[in-house]
Length: 128
Image 1 (tube, helix red, strand yellow):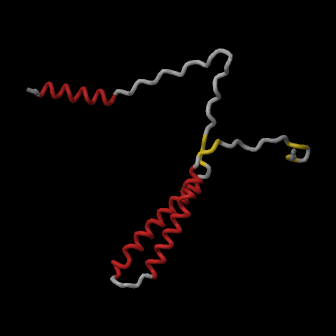
Image 2 (cartoon, rainbow, N blue to C red):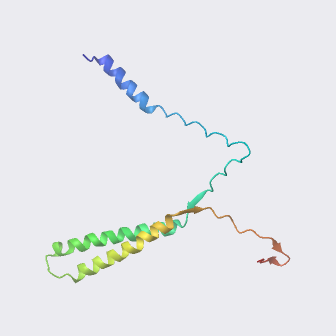
Image 3 (cartoon, one colour):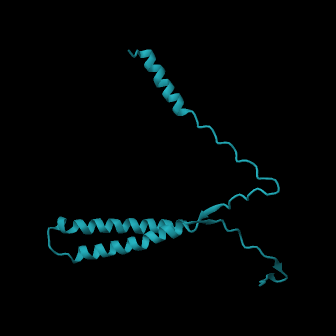
């Protein structure tokens, strides 16, 4: 029979084990003799966050237009489908434009450093 005390011990043990952080993995072994350690990966950043956010907004608007187009004939009670068809087409185009914008803008690329060059006597010079 489970008593209050044993139930309290079980609950305390469950909370304690859930709050205990997991142990860290062992560090990777050193590289073999004669070989250099691999270079750390380059830091990454989104290609263009503005494109990504714009794609999210456009695709969400397109989804809303598709839903409105599906409900418009039911809500108005008419058989006129030209407005619903236009909204459906507009929503499909908005989704077709928004999804690639999200993907291209959110793709992670290496961080680009500022342009480096040597200043010439009269400002920056170009060298090819």
